[in-house]
Image 1 (spheres, protein in one colour):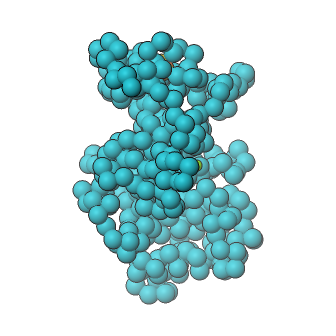
Image 2 (cartoon, helix red, strand yellow; image 1 turned 90 degrees about the horizontal axis):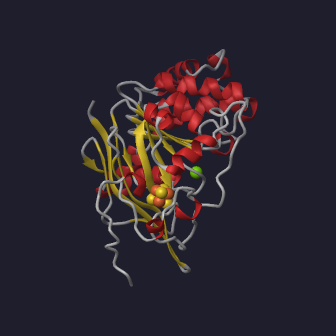
Length: 331
Ligand code: SF4
Ligand code: MG
């Protein structure tokens, strides 16, 4: 498969008066055409900021640093003007936001909101064409009696149906990439399963999916590859089978023990301690204050992301063949 999105050395910083907070710290990954990738980590790991950086929707005072590179089909997105990015958003890259209720306009009908997305991007021949397409999209995402529900307001739809509407809206201009931020968090368990199936069904050779989630269970059901983020850095990358059968990074192992869908009947763990936030970052491995396998050098040496010998990559000193004989520049 061909590379669709290539993110290289992405750094996104929030430059506040209290100091610089690095939300995304040197993150690189690719998404192939039609591929489904999960970006996993705790809240504050930099997952949403990574997604928003791709769309250049990071809010002030967030800044993508000059060394960062984001390419879509080989084109440098960071060199685009705001007008060009506005046309890429929704058209080439669609975002499914976290909260379906607050992302829909309560005063406009469901159908009109889908039509409007297409209208903005000049998609469809005319209003009638867009209307017909919106109805068939609503039917495709499983809204029963779609033609008659077209003129309903968001308040007349259930939470699950609203999430389906956002998926229909994301699909409306046939994007090559959909980024979904915690697409199932607000839903009950049976609706979650339906949305997972729907997201799997709507990805195709022409549409790739990047799912942002704290839930490894969702990744297990939906994705082909996983990137685990911790404190803005990549802890581990792997295909899905590898992450569950043979997790390499201690943080990934912890996440697996904390995933309700994967530890059914077993005691659900939480990872002791909390992720570093703000400008106070630990030296060495970002995870070392919480890592049960930490060694002395972990507080000094920052692990590099290196091939793990199984086709994936891991940033952990337990999994490195390199010489790290304390050649650290001491201040
Ligand atoms: Fe734990 Fe050390 Fe590996 Fe970091 S580098 S995850 S502290 S063992
Ligand atoms: Mg988030």
